[in-house]
Image (cartoon, rainbow, N blue to C red; front, side, top):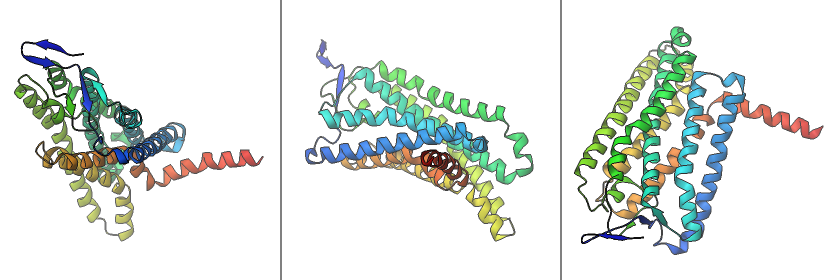
Length: 315
């Protein structure tokens, strides 16, 4: 597995320590993550099916919500199966290539989510602030361009620094004190100069996460300003209800992202970092469900097939 280069041992696989220091909780954690995995996959796939099959959900808002559900199923496939396998079998090894691949997809999907949330806020901005021009402005072509641009932007945003990271060599000890391959725990194991990689990471993060966040903030300032100018209370409540769930998602996503990657830096207590990282992953996985719970159209789309199935069963 290992080979020597000079006086330095270079490793080809890492050990994800995860929650190994809590052996008495392994079964509980496995069952907890398994339930979360099943519920998340089922909920997001259900949303995707509804958006595709129900004609009244063929609108820009639900098109972007379907994209968000696709994003979260990808998050699930990137993170939880490896965690579940480690908890079940006790094998916590992961190859360096596999670790970097997991980091690439995790960072790419985070960047894509930043872009998608910004696009969804733009959609709500047009719907509330420019209702007479909404249909003309937010047409099918623009929706497709915004969605494709979000995915391409997210995956391109980390390509350079992930490529640079893949060129590094790593030394013993090869233990990552985390349950997935995160940037800071991985980079600390490198036995080569990491300054350039850190600079590339900072630049790509600044370019592809800060502008979408500022755009989202700007759109919601305009949205809230417009809502407050609506004379009737009923009108204000109706306008706010169309974007309240998305605003909750943006707040949770950005809040946990800032907490985990800015406030809780590499010098923070390792257990605290793990706890908030779990919270970050869970909130990311639940965002489409939060978006859908308060939408009457989604509930109606879910009620119809259930009602048809019930009638078919009775007959």
